[in-house]
Length: 226
Image 1 (tube, rainbow, N blue to C red):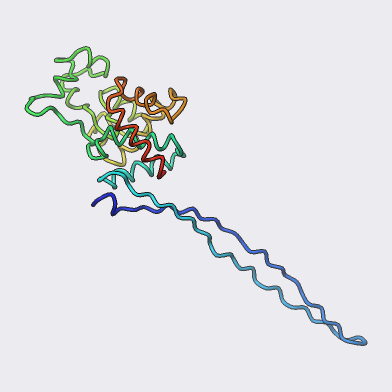
Image 2 (cartoon, rainbow, N blue to C red):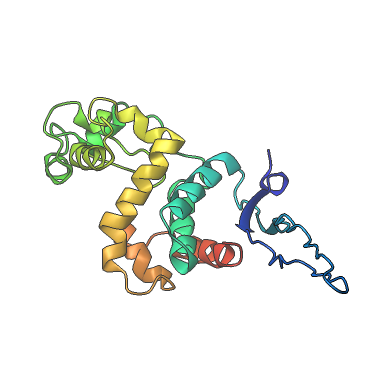
């Protein structure tokens, strides 16, 4: 399914009631005549006023993109922060397509060589990888690649999800959305003063600011639609 074929409508409903004047018409007869009072009319609700906002996904993976967007919006995120969140995750996940870190072709045991205590002790120590095999078990997953035993543990505790024993859950779009939001709120947001500054935000995710041009273009695109 192409992104142009997938349009999501957000509805904001304002409900109101018409003011209904309830009264009686008093008719007096001459010389001791009787009077009659009209029965009150039943209040009727107004027609709902629906304002529709259309969001056309920017990626070719609209299901993942929408899952992440809904999670972010449900948390109250909006404006430049929401645009920046979507821009950064779009880049990190390769257009919302890659929820698992891709190993280098032809390299056997790539993740263990990159993250494991046996082959890369300094990196393993930073990531909290204590056991042989942790490099493979806790390689990058999700919209913002969650990597290392310590990060899986902290995210799992915060979200009440057993990621240590079930690391593959981090690649499920729904869980990955929650992890991305947790990471953003705990590791990125506290250190950003202006979400319009893509360079500053990027450095909190990728200190080398790799892919900055793409991230900036994503941010501009999302600012026009969220």
